[in-house]
Amino acid sequence: MHLLIVEDEEKIANFLRRGFLEERYAVDIAKDGEEALYKFEINEYDCIILDVMIPKLDGISVCRKIREKSTGIPILLLTAKTAVEDKITGLDAGADDYVIKPFSFAELTARIRALVRRGKKADPVILTFDNLTLNPATKTATRGGKNIILTTREYALLEYLMRHPNTVITKTQLLEHIWDYNYEGFSNIVETYVKYLRKKLKTTPQEKEIIHTMRGSGYILKLP
Image (tube, rainbow, N blue to C red; front, side, top):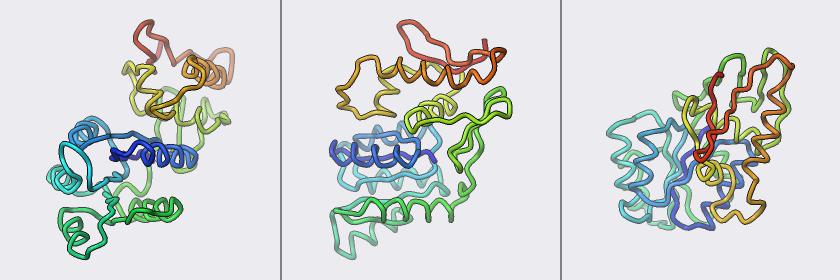
């Protein structure tokens, strides 16, 4: 499942990112309404988690603009407002559900699963590239019919690359997508995980290398 989280409070955004990554979801973060609309335009998401009080363009306005272009994608609002009128405003803007802050992460994930089941994207599309297959529903990967055992981070890295084939992905994009914005661990963490993933994707000596380093730019998933 590919999620867009629109949240300007860094602690909450990082908390949600870590939680969903542990669930093996692919996660993108937007910090304001304009960034949310930009990412919505260039990516496909299974669900959008949208904070109401965000900079530049508020969540209700973002919700309305998304609904002008897409009626199918589930939208769940995060709000600190408890008044009935505020809830009605959000639902009338096109939201499918809402969760009031503070919230339980378990409840949030359950609501998201329910929304996606009801939506037209309830059955995730299996991602394929050459003879590599990734099933977002079961969080499994195979290459040439052979199962590949992946850690949570390796899975997130592979899914992100497979959702953007033949596109150069920068190290910064991968850090922001798979690790926290304020990650302060090993400086070569991306390189290390790419190395792990390449090794696991080499299920036989004959398998082609499909993750390529673009020096000074990043990485790309493509055939030789």
